[in-house]
Length: 401
Image 1 (cartoon, rainbow, N blue to C red):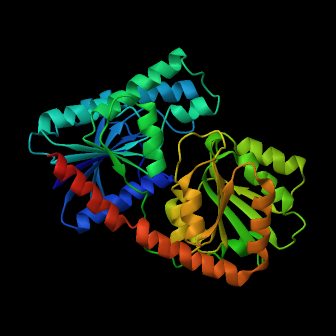
Image 2: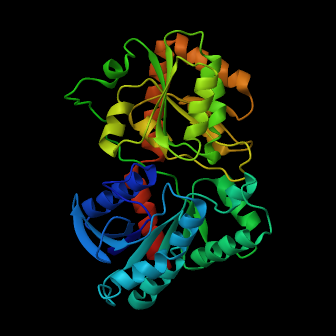
């Protein structure tokens, strides 16, 4: 099949998990004989359209205003224009036989117009990989008011995006339940897990290990990597770091970007934490090397969520056979999945005491860390392999034709 993959962020410059996941999906599809073109915005380019090759993946980049790490109003305006700018840039490249299917990723919710245009020209089906129920999570977090004009604005584009999908893949059964409760219109849904290529990183640092650079030799490193924002409730993990301060060989390393970076640094300063280090985002190769040196993979989801996300960062932890430690919103089926497979310890956000006790347990027992890490890789292999996900998406597209 000739496939168009649409996402608002892509390699090599992106440090986000979604970009890595979509690239691994593209490579897997190509390995299986399909022709793949990724369509994605570029903030820095001058021409409206550029074409390049990344690991055999054909990439079409269209010029866009900034949509990451900018103010909320600027981001909303530039995201609103994504479909318009994309189609203006690529329409001369799209013929009736260009694509047999479209796979698009949300967030962003603003690609519905572009998907519709491609479907009209190519008469092909589309598959929406829906990872984030936006704007619902920002309403849950109290960032925008339910029923407000801005919420209705976002809802319009959200549902416009859903209507262009022949199949919508959500992360879990609980997410499908929430999605169907919130949408009176019946959209075609199925479970589509997050995914990763099963290729652990073997560190090849020429300038020395991260541990030696940061003076962390002999430490048990609790690592958080990815978005540092409201949806994650980073104060939850900072309370954990504070609770572990008396364990002299425990260290918390956070790497990423987002609107709570200032918050975590302020909390670390106010509490005079000596067991905490923050580093800004790094590229994907550096990120993988960091993962190969740490001991425990951390994550957190806000207790205010009504949706049940599976953070993509967990896949990176699992690839490197790291035990998982974190907390989720009430009812999230990720808790049961990880705990039942003995791949780590997940608790409900707000139960600080249990989260701390689990952290201490991992700190004190290296054999336990090793076994849980092996189990996390086995869980990845069974549920989240990119080869399985690629097949599932293709089946969905073919059944929709």
